[in-house]
Length: 324
Image 1 (cartoon, rainbow, N blue to C red):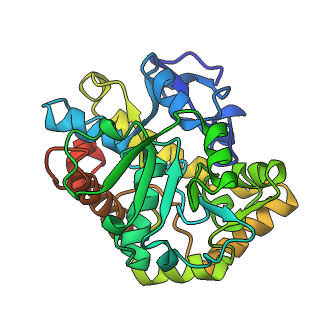
Image 2 (image 1 turned 120 degrees about the horizontal axis):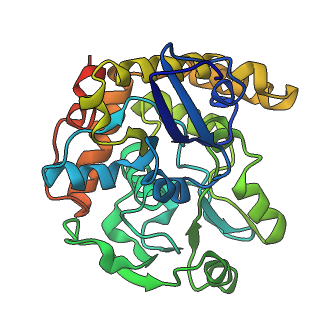
């Protein structure tokens, strides 16, 4: 935006079709201008970068810990990177494992910790969508001691903190399945993401769940499309301008609505295919029934896992003026 403005913001946003409206100036807020950093692709790195910005992202677990410690609500109901967290399990191509229920009594590895966004959310989906008894699995995870309390009594064992050595663990047969990070939104359902990049390097591996219809059925049954990350604002911004947070939510919603105009033909086909399979478009801003359900389920799981001290109403994380 080029006009003189009363407030100027620094934002770190993912380089994605649903944020491009901010980049090219098609989305604006009267009286507000901004400088956007679109150069940080990976969410955890954006979390760190966001600490020096007015608007960015953070993980729900981090926000929950801060909230329970008395920090003010800083979240906005905007979700850049929801993932289905089901394609994230890899097995060897010659494995006799073909369904999450086959994991009972097996060994699952990852460089990710049990309380991380992807690591924990995959465990949650195994439990919630497929009824997998998590306590019957031998978990080889990055820094298992990162959980303050192991409330579930899981069999947690250490694994390398770097991703590459864990692929070797799976290829050698040291573990039976591996959890890795994937891509957001429709990529998490249909592919063309980091998981496919890994499979191109490790041709002896395949996803445990390969059929989009299986994942879509899990969504229709559970309504779970995990929300592990949310947009956040600098803690003092709601006090400086109480009207700003809902105006930001509206701006992000308008940018999200323009996403199809920034997608190529193949990616747009994927976005439409996801809506067809799920029966709705889950990628909306706001705190509706679906978003509250997903956030409450994740917060409850984090508590039962031992990652946070107690469960609570997820609306408490959000700036009051953005709540229903």
